[in-house]
Length: 477
Ligand code: NDP
Image (cartoon, rainbow, N blue to C red; front, top):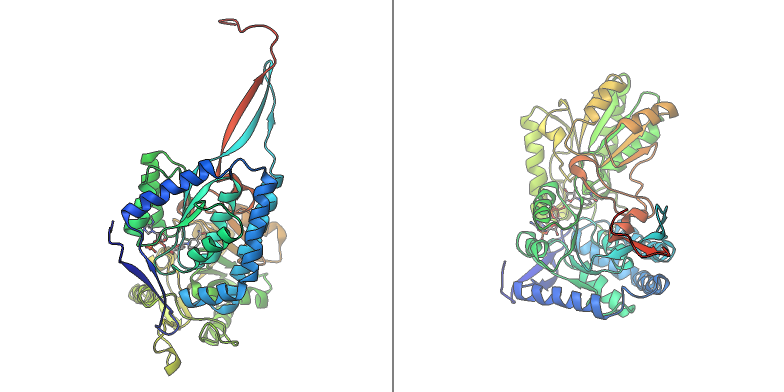
């Protein structure tokens, strides 16, 4: 990795190409100092030894400060990654709620008194790992950072947070706010730089005892290999190619609205984007026409516009990836029913805008139906019956999420259970709450964030036995 202290990352606003801010890249030597400082804070600050309700007080204070800075944080994230301001405000709210939730979970989490099989009392406690690495992607920085940092701190750890080089500005703000709220110095530190060097060095660092990663599946596999070699636990929240299913007995108006929101919200830059839309054949043509009509009318605008439905992509180079994805879909024989191009108009020239894109005519095994685009691109596929649907919906390497629309609750139960995904939404989509576990099946990940599972993720179970025997131990029984 680089050792130049002078190297900087430049955050570019993808709506207009203007510089938003700069951060210094962390050098190898600095990383060593940061890890040592984290261990020092972990061992000496007393954080891990506080009563849970005392740690909870600090987490609540962080939440309060985040809430009081909501507007400036939302504005900063909007400029850093181009998401609509309304979504950025929602993500700050989410971060606030996450710190509040883990404050409550921290002080109410109970461990077990286990059934004895001898003259002793036995029970479990949850011990922190020590220093945890939290690595996050660019699409929802403040939300993803909070989802890792809040439970990791609640469990008593020190955290080293590495944001994406494409959205580096929110993580330092979270660290600043946490410190001001009373978190001991050194317990939350940020490293900056390219994933391939700074991120990889963090993962490989012998001082890091647990790794929590959100990002792409290719990176997740690489991190998993290093973690396996080092024998450190790893939580991986990875990509998806989530099926969004419309049965012929569905409320079509609601289903179409959700299908549109499920992929074009956040310009498709969401791990749970419903990017593979399955429509039962008897209603396929009708629903497809409604989808195309609605997608074609989506209001594209600058992220701070009041009247916006979709903003730019997160960067110009990410738009190039989306363009390459659509070009390949064309080569595979996909029909681009709308979008498939940059929008026209002076207001879009400098930004990373791309039109909402609907593709049909591909088989379920086409590469475009198998690989994640992470942009505003959906493929629409017809299906005949439930068994064919389940086979096709499960027929990718991923298993993150699924939406299904039907008025038949027994069918919803059957299909919901048969789908290989960590989250299934019936007659709704993209519900993501801090109190409900979230994670992937198959190549979409390992482990569950959010909810109580998300707190247990950052602790290791220790079993304690207190002997009650009246006599000395015999050598053998
Ligand atoms: P990447 O996997 O490229 O990057 C994610 C993070 O990992 C970034 O901070 C990146 O740094 C860092 N990184 C990259 N290479 C390494 C490495 N070798 N070692 C350690 N860290 C590394 O993903 P994207 O940023 O492109 O994010 C998009 C992906 O994230 C999508 O696939 C999406 O599905 C997934 N995602 C999953 C979510 C989930 O909860 N399941 C939620 C949100 C996104 P840098 O950017 O500086 O290279």
